[in-house]
Length: 171
Image (cartoon, rainbow, N blue to C red; front, side, top):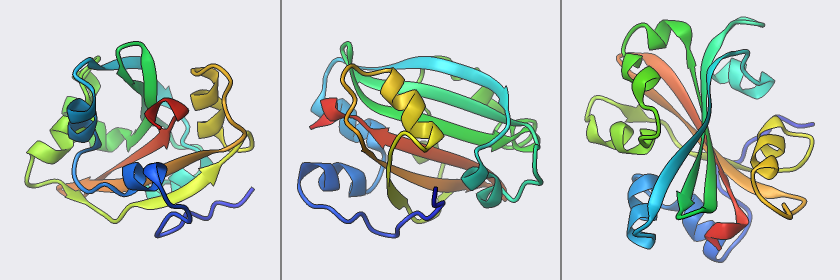
């Protein structure tokens, strides 16, 4: 499986519009759906996926904090979000991440002017990618491929990687 992420998604239409929206995805979803909510699926220590390890400049098999949530409209899952931070980041500038619970991370990322978001990257994922497997397990009749985007955020030089998988309910 390739670890290659694109600087621009190779598609058009509504999915392209959602993938490439600037600013906070959480804010856009709230505008789209008054019943917006976050369901935390998992938060704890894990090893990063291979393609995340390099972006976070981590040696192999280093532990990170992983947070996985569904962004939903009522009970309808719209986006599966997967956030990864080195433990040193959680003990430092990103310590508030550990206490988010069911609150959206997206709001916190765009409220703090000290947080820098690097450019988004995109890719189509399928069963070979670990993000697809978790996202697909949380929706009925998952398509064979899903679009994902990710960005690295920096706060006082400490990285946080956020990946978002766009689910069919968004269309």
